[in-house]
Image 1 (cartoon, rainbow, N blue to C red):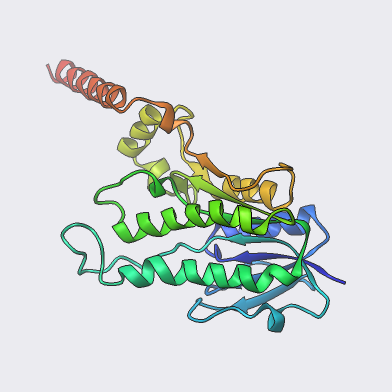
Image 2 (tube, rainbow, N blue to C red):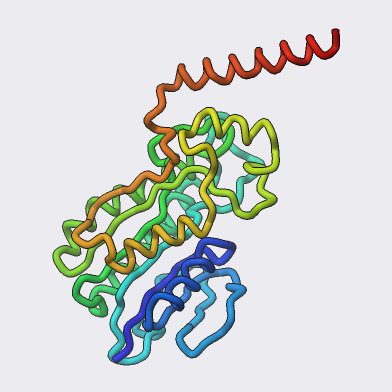
Length: 262
């Protein structure tokens, strides 16, 4: 009998780190479901299925006979790329598809997986702090709503899947894709993050992968139905104090420039 960890999405970054972590930390097999090719060394422990979630996933056809599922990690971005015809109040003509399609695919995947779950198995969903906060101009309503649905699925399914399977959700904030990310290289962005985030920096993809694995592997033990916020502490700061700190910094820098020019 083979045990599997299923990784859905994330092929552009976090998923790759997660798969490498599973290969290093466990002896189980991995089923990867994604629309992108994972740039990862092939081994006998990997099964890769290219899929864009346009239809239901049938695990019976994908998993070897008598297989069991240890975990499912769901890292789908939730929305198609931003369109040109965004409504004036922030949603696109793809709103129903963006909010519904991937979340419905997730529910069908969970339903298909139920007969295969081991005891003490785990599901980890990746949401965003934008499920509960607003980033006007930086993300559409489609994205905010689709992530909020993920957190609702987490709460509801925790009762449905207990006691055999735990389900939890990660809600990360800013993530730097690599060392060339604007979050790290642009001075204005870097300064804004230092002021608005107690830890003073964005997350790295491998840090998110580590957090996913800690839940997927059951290292945190008896935890289900929770959304774990990973925002570097920004949610504990009072918004006006952040604005005041940023304004003070701008005034100090302006004063220095005037002194130097004089």
